[in-house]
Image (tube, rainbow, N blue to C red; front, top):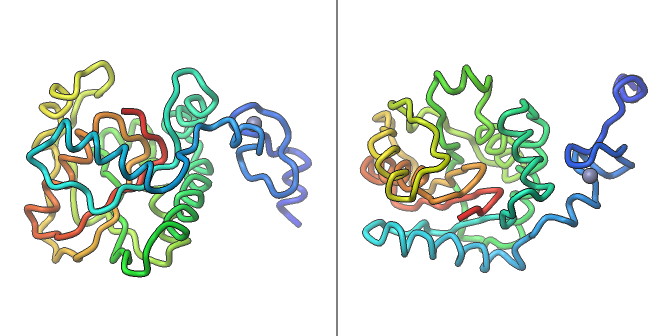
Length: 229
Ligand SMILES: [Zn+2]
């Protein structure tokens, strides 16, 4: 009821094109959703992400499994929606994308692929203040709700305030984030699903994976909304 009343005053519009949402649409209209370049299937996304690891971080272990929803294209609707999510404080978008990711994982995972917990890539606390929230954590919360597992933000911390990755080469990015993360010394679960909103060069997730591995985590999978490598 309250929701209906609020709707009269604050009608729900699509975060991509600002048209009114119809019944069954949540935050993003079906036209915008259809415009996103979705991976043909879970294996295609898994391959694309792992290929980046093979090329850029040949020394590192590959993620066990990599999940991604969309390919990035400059100036498409998805880009403006992701921008709104990251910098415009649009929490609800993180929730929607978390649900989409959960659907992908539920249909594409083997029964054996159970995750003990979900870990969002941490933001440095100063950056979290600037942006007021960690969008990867919002996605992780939503994902965890649908997968029926826990979110752990106490396993790894970001200890360095890294400058923005924008405009840096993969090598520079790796240098920028290397040693930026540290495991907290908690007892580590065996199977972790690491969540980052956008996968660009992989430098950030590679650094987080390194710190988790050095703390004894055996299996790390990866989930991301946008593959932008
Ligand atoms: Zn739209």
